[in-house]
Length: 470
Image 1: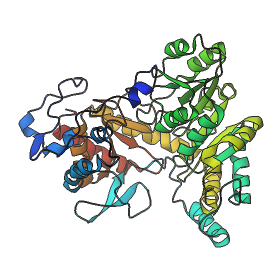
Image 2 (image 1 turned 180 degrees about the vertical axis):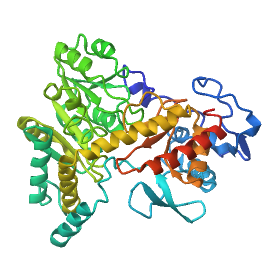
Image 3 (image 1 turned 90 degrees about the vertical axis):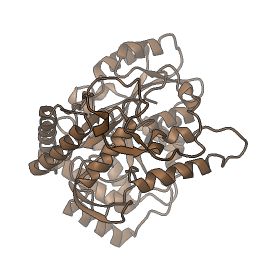
Image 4 (image 1 turned 60 degrees about the vertical axis):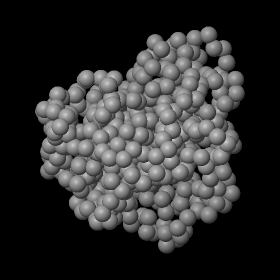
C-alpha cells in the first residue's frame, strides 16, 4: 500500500506481478544485482567484489507468487515451494524464528538453519516498549487468573466469552483514554477491521494516510466504501481528496507510523477534517501508553485529544500483551458493539491475557519513569547510530528504521546480524515500497546502556561491511 496510487487502492490490488517463476535460478548472485533505479541516498561507494553473495532466488519475493494464469487455484503452490526450498534453508528467511525465552532485551532464538539455540541476542525485534510483558507482577496476575478461569474464554464476547475481567478492563481503558467507553478486540488487526467496516458503508468515503497499516486497508476494503489515500502527512493532499464529496467521510491516520517511526501531522489534518465535515480516527498502536504527559498518546502530546472522534490502539506494543481497543463516545461504542463482525464472530480474549493486561495498564499508569527511561534510550540509540552516520530516516520515536533500500542486501545483512548477536526485523517489499527496504528497530525502556552500545556496535560493523555507512 505504501507505493499505491494515493487516489485509489484498487490500482495496487490489480497490479500485474513480475513474471511468475517456475523454478528459482541456480547459483549465486551479487547482493542487489539488477537494481538500477535505486536512489543513491545513503549509499556508500563499495567494491562489488567485496560484498557477500546470496542465492539468486533472493531476487524474487512474495509478489512473484501473488498472481498467476490458469484455472487451478493451486497453480502457484509448486513454484512457491521451489523458491521456499532455496531461501529458507539458506538462512535468509529471518521470519517466524522460534523464541525460546520471553521477549526481553536479550532473547534466546532457535536458528532454523542449524537447529541450534542462539542465546542472549540483543533484542530489537520485539515491541514491548515499556518492558511489561515479563514483569513479575504481570506474570503473577496471569497465574492467578489461570487458577480461576483456565486457559481460554471459550466463547465470543456477545455469548459466553465476557467475564467481569473483560468488563473491568474495558472501563479501565476508557478511563485511561479519558473517553466514555471502550470496546476490547482479540487483536489490533481485528479492532481496525471491525471498527472501519462496522461504521462505514458502500457510498461513504474513507481517506487514509498513504502509509496506513494493512489492517486499516483491509477494513477499508471490507467496508465497500469509496477508498482513497492521501500522500503521507500531507494535509493539502487530504483536502483535495475530500473536496467535493458530500456524503459520510472518515479520515484515518496513525499516531506513529510503524515502518518509518515518524509522527502524524495531526494538527493540520484535524483542521482539514473539521473544514470538510469529516470524522477522524487515529490508530495509536505504536504511541498509546508512551506518548503524552500521562501516556494517552500523540493526541495528548499535541493537545488534540478532544478533536479526534475515534481512538484505536493495541495492547501488544507498549503493554506487551495481546488485543486491541476502540475508545470514544458511548453511542459510538454501543453501535460498534452491534456491527463489528470481527469482534462478535471471534472468540473473546482469554481472561488470562486480560488479567495480565490489567496489571500492565496499572503499572504503565503509575510508573511514568518508564516513559522517561524509554525516551532516554531512544535518544541514546539515535546518537550512537547518528555518530556512525547510519541512515535512520526521519524517526522521532522508539521505532527506528535503518534504511538499506535493497531487498537482497537487507536480508543478507539480517542473517549476519543474527549470527553476530543482534535480533532485528528486516522489512522488504511489499511491506514497504520498492527500494525502501530497511531494518525496523524497536527500543524498550528495559534496554540497558550496555545493550544499546553492544547492539549499535554490531549494527555499525555489519552496515560498514555492506557499504551502507562509512
